[in-house]
Amino acid sequence: MISRQLNRRLFAICRSGWQEGEQDATDLRPRLERHQYTNTYGQLPEALVQCATNYNLNLNIQHIWLGKYVSFNDEVTLDDIAHGFYPFVLSGQGIDHKFYDFLNNYLKEPGSDGVVRVAGANMNYRFLSLVQSDHPIRSRSKTLRLEPQPVRTPKPVPLGVYRDYSHSGKDMGIMFSIKQAEGDRQPVVRDILKSLQVEDNNAYQQRFEDLKKLTEEQQTLDIKEKQRGRYAMLVFHVKDDQGSNFERDDFENLLLTGADYQPRRMPDGFLKDKQMNATTHNLVLYIDCEKIAKIKDGRFGIRVTARPAKGFAYYAAGEYHSDGVKLSDVLVANQTTYVDVYLKRNVDKNVFRFDRGDVKRGSFKKLKPVGGAD
Figure 1: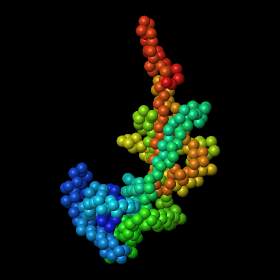
Figure 2: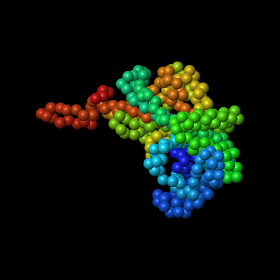
Figure 3: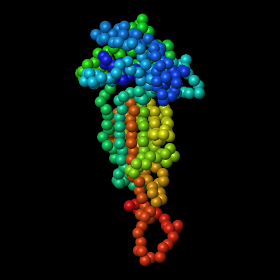
Figure 4: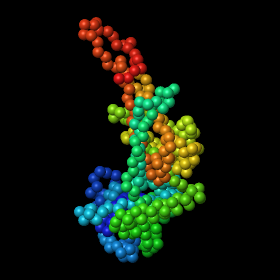
C-alpha cells in the first residue's frame, strides 16, 4: 500500500507490516539508523526521480528513513501547508501465493494485498450513529427503534487499486517489485507522478475520477475471472447512554433483510470474516459487496440485543430498519463503515427508594424489580 500526502516538496511512503528482521520496539532511533539507505522500497524512489522531469517535476530523494509505518524525505514547512496537501492511496489487490501459509489464510484473503485490506487502506469511510429511542418497533418483543443520524463522510480521497500488485515481494510487491529501468511503464510509478502534479482542487478532483476509473476496471476484471472481487468492512461499536462499552459476550448483533426485516435471510456467502477486538470492543464484519447487493428489495436492518435483558438494570433490544435508505448510502465497496450504537440503560424503580424515617427498617433480600424504569 502506498499512501499519504504527496506534493513537490514532500514525499512519503506508508506501509503496514514489517520486513523480516525489523525491530518491533518503541524507540525509533536505533531502527532508523540501521535502515538508512534501506532497500525496503526496491527501486521505486530511483524510478520516480528518473521519470520526474517528464512530468515537469523536480524530485530530490536522497535517502529514505524507515520508521515503523511512515518515512519522510523532507520536513513539513509552512510553505507546504500553504501549497496544500492532496493525499491519495494506491493499493494492490493481488495475492502472491509464494507467501501463502496454510496456518494463516489471511495471507490470501480476497479484497486485500495479502496483508492490508483495501477497505482498511482506503481513506474514504462512512460513519453512522444509531441512538435507541423510546418508540417500539416490535411491540411483541419490546424492541425499540434505533434512530439513525445522517451518514457522515470525509472529503473524498483518490484511491487506486491494482490487481497485479501485492503487499510485498520482488515479483508482485507494490514497491519492492519496481524496477528503475522500466520507469513509468510501471502503473504505480506513473500514477504517483501524476498525483504529484496536482496543485489545485480541480486537478485533485480529476485525479480522483481517474483513479476511480482505474479501480473499477481492475476489480471488474477480478469479478469476471471469479478471483478477488470487492469487499467492505462494517465496524460496530456498541455502548449504552452512560458511556459503558459492551464486552464480547454482552451483546448480539444480527443483520436483517426482507420486507419484515428478519435475520438469517442474507445472501449465501456474503460474510467473509468476523472478528471481535477485545481492546476496542469493536465487532468487525468483512462483507462481499457483490453478494450483499443481492438482498431482496434492498431492505436491510440491524438488531442489537444486549445483556442483561431483565433485572434491576437492563437493556431492551434495539433495531434499525433502512425504510427506503439505499444500501449504497451505508455500505460502499472498498470502504469501511463505522456504526456506533447507543442503547438506553433502563433502571428499575426498586433500585433506589425513600421511606419514612420512623418506619422500622426491613430487609431488601426479597425485593424484586417491578418492571418499571426511572
